[in-house]
Length: 87
Image (cartoon, rainbow, N blue to C red; front, side, top):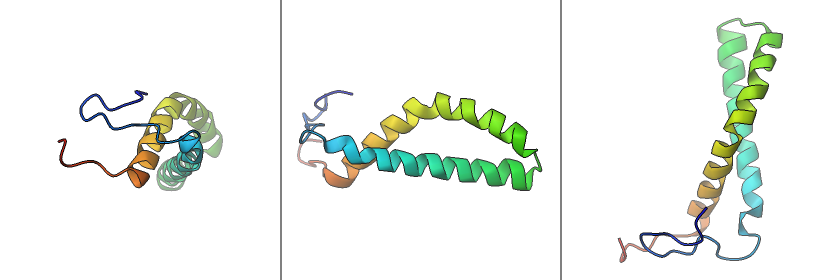
């Protein structure tokens, strides 16, 4: 992740440990993903739970970088307002 925005120069690290709480946002994304896929595959499509879990673990591993970045972006969006004068 860049330390500053290449377009407007916004500091992406306002203070040390700023993104520590973004792990809770990431946890929420994982929980929503697991519940959503559970209801789609197990409840609605009637896929066996063992097959669902076998498919879930690799997808969670593959989606880790995506959820990591989205959680940091979400946390930054909640606490740092964009500067409209620069854009």
